[in-house]
Each structure stands twice: as C-alpha cells, then as structure tokens.
Amino acid sequence: MRIDPEDIRICLEDHPARQPGPESMATPIVQTSLFAYPTFDEFVEAHTAESRNYVYTRGQNPTVEALEKKLAALEHGEMCKAFGSGIAAISAVIMGLLKSGDHILFVNHTYGPALKLAKTLERFGIEHTLLLDLEPEDVTRALQPNTKLVWLENPGTMMFRTFDVAAIADIARKHGAITSIDNSWASPLFQKPIDCGVDISIHSATKYIGGHSDVVAGALITNAILMDAIYQRAFMLHGGILHPFDAWLLLRGMRTLPVRMQQHHADGLRVAEWLRDRKEVAAVHHPAFCDRSKTLTGYSGVFSFEIANGGFNEVRKFIDGLKRFRIGISWGGVESLVATPTRADNVEYLDSQRFPHGLIRLSIGHEGADQLIEDIESSFDSM
Ligand SMILES: *Cc1c(COP(=O)(O)O)cnc(C)c1O
Image 1 (cartoon, rainbow, N blue to C red):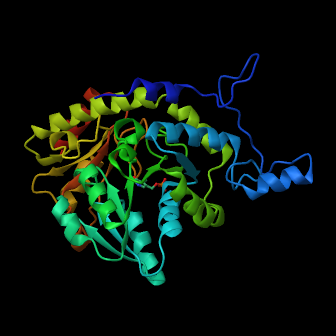
Image 2 (cartoon, helix red, strand yellow; image 1 turned 180 degrees about the vertical axis):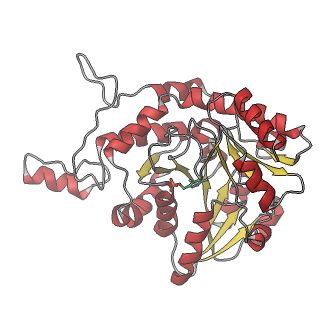
Image 3 (cartoon, rainbow, N blue to C red; image 1 turned 30 degrees about the horizontal axis):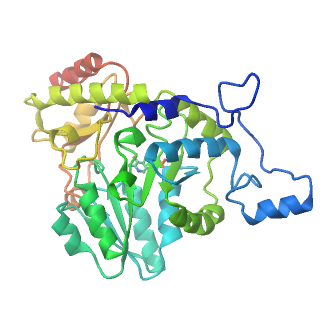
C-alpha cells in the first residue's frame, strides 16, 4: 500500500483562504442561500460567470468550494463539482454530455442504480450496453459508431474484478468517446484515474470520503471543457447540489481519510485472506488476489466471497448468524456491513449479471480484524 505524502497534506489542511491573524482550524460553514453585492455592476459581472463567483448557493458556495478544491487536487484533475449524492453526479455526467441517439458502453459490473438510470434514459433515445468481458479486444468489439461515453468501474461492483484502466481509456479516446470512472471504491487515495487518461472521475462521497455514515454526497472531477458542459446543462439546471453543512461534514471526514484507508486496507486483506482458507468458502473476490488494473496503490475494505454450494437459504442463515456486522446497503463507514444481491426469487437477475448465488459482500470497518473474523467463524459454525 502506498499513499502519496502530498495527498495526506491535502486531506489534513483544512483552511481555504489564509488570512493574517489567528484563524479557525476548521473551514467555516457559510450557511447562506445567496450573496449580496455592493453595486449593481459588480452583481452583473459576477452573475455572468456564476460558476466562478459566489452569487447563489445553487451555483457556488465557499464551504462547498473548499471541498471541491481538495478533491480536484487529490484526483489530479482541473475541476471538481460536488453534488447532493453520488447518483446526482452520475446523472449530471450522462445528461450533461449525451443526447438522443448516443450510446453508453458500461465496462465491468456497474453500480446498479447507474444501470437503472441508463434504462430510464432509453425513453429519451439514449442506448446502452453492459460489457462484462474485460479484455481490451472485448471493449474494441463492443464499441459502436454512436458510443459517446464509456463508463468504467474499477474494481467493479459486487465481484470486484479489475481491468487495465489505461488501455481501455486509450481505446475509448481513439474511438472519440469520453471516459468516466466510478472511483468510489478506491477513494482518491488509492487510484488516480485521470493520470491514466480517464476524462471524468466520479465518487459517491457517501462512502469513504465521508466515512462516518452520516452524509449522502457525490462529486465529479474533470477538465475545464467537460466541466463547463456539465455545469451549464446538468449542474445548475438539475439542482442536485451539496449543502454547505454536508460539505463541512465531508471536509471533516477527509481529515482522517488517510488513516482510515490504511486501516481498511490492512483489515480488509486480513479478513479476505482468512476467508480464503475456509472450507465453507468457494471463492473470495478481493482485487488483491487478481489485480489486472495496474492502477491501485492500495485496497479499500469492501470485497465479496461465495458460500460453497450456497444459495438464498445459506446466505440468509450466514447473514443472520453475524453479530458484529450490521445488515445494510451502504459501505465505507467505520462500522462493518454485510450485504448480498441474492434474494429468494432473483436467480434470473443473478445469472444475467454473472453473480454467483451464494455471493456475500462485506465492508470492513474499524472494529478490528480479529473481532470480525471471530464473528464470521461463529456464524459459519452455527450454519
Ligand atoms: C453508493 C454508490 C453510488 C451512488 O452514490 P449515492 O451517494 O448513494 O447516490 C455510486 N457508485 C457506487 C460504486 C456506490 O457504491
């Protein structure tokens, strides 16, 4: 695992504008809906470039901007916009950049609601395909003349498979398509997609960036040209904004992002390695065991495993036997969580996604790997 010392500095430093004299250690929460100007001319000048000035909090706000600057710096991108959720950032990319007749190619297992969004956009003439074969040749074959956006997730949802991000970004660029990656799993500390040639990096900041299960938020980082299109068409007009207080919660969370990620990396690996040796387990899907991406400098704490010969009943029994893991859908907080795509009646869906029927996803929190292993072992024993 490696975290850039410069990234640690960015995460810890929490003051946007240095002023002479004593200063607050934390960024102030500027809880206002608008900004008033001394003269009409100054107001008009600011209003004509609303993305760069404080005019109205639906456009820009100093607390939110402090967060955006930090995320842009960590991701090595030119600009960042924060959103009220990760799915708002995903929607802004798709609706800000595509039009009727365009096609999206999703590469790798993709966050479910992003696929659902693509499905609803069929009504507006936007097509999509999900590609689960991850060799560069597979991507070349799957590109269509109208593919305008290649959507990546590395590692992918639920199965945590990885692929060569730089090679696939290169193929997409030569095709004339924009690439966007969901970087929530790795956090900005363990993967720098823009350095690999990806155009847009998005986050569900609800997960590791916030880190405390107390805020829903999202962000996207990209260059000035794409940001302008997204800002004008989708950010200002769809209204999925992040509020100043939530931005402040994220700034606060980020001060511990480096230590949290180191702990998730270490404890996630320990639990995954322990699971690999158990007879109850058919396979463990952790990127460390098969990392083909060459871009991850560390691993977060979310991975999955398959219960041997398991289906819905075994999955349910295992989950209900856990005491320390909480049952819930999110991840990336300090508490460990368990989830599964398996339901009593969804075998067709699981097969269409190539998800094994006994699949269980764990998000390793900060209770300590020994406690968590003990919990899993006792649940196996009671099955
Ligand atoms: C949770 C999640 C999202 C969506 O983020 P929200 O903040 O819940 O809107 C997107 N991508 C991944 C990988 C996620 O886990």
